Image 1 (cartoon, helix red, strand yellow):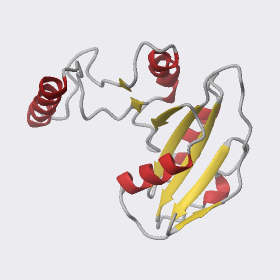
Image 2 (cartoon, helix red, strand yellow):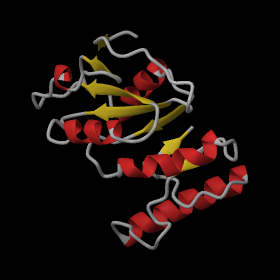
Image 3 (tube, rainbow, N blue to C red):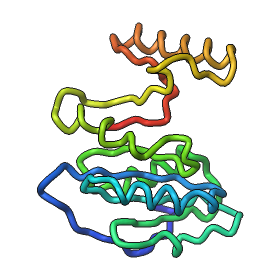
Length: 171
């Protein structure tokens, strides 16, 4: 991929479980990225982690997270989270894919429960919901906008999504 550098990583797969590729886009998050990588690696799932540094300028070094089961890539300049996710998707080896934010806004311990419906074939994709247990919007305007977008998506595509802007999407 043009403008993307990489470091070596692990290439092993397990036949016991579907392999999950966890994409972690990073931009100026050196304070939290090591913690999120460690927490994802502790999960009882056969997985790989793909860290994509999107041109961080906070002194973050990919070499500090590169290890077994962790492959790292970097953009020379900041291109946005979407570009970092696309770079990660181009590198996945797993049967399932999820994006995990590096700031730990989302709890990696939720991943086993989120991937289960896709892994067992009862769903093609899973959207996590921040609101399944109640109203947790930052503001009323934010909540109404999310409600409208989720409702429109459900109407147009015949789906039942509670939180269109959810951070977790498993596919």
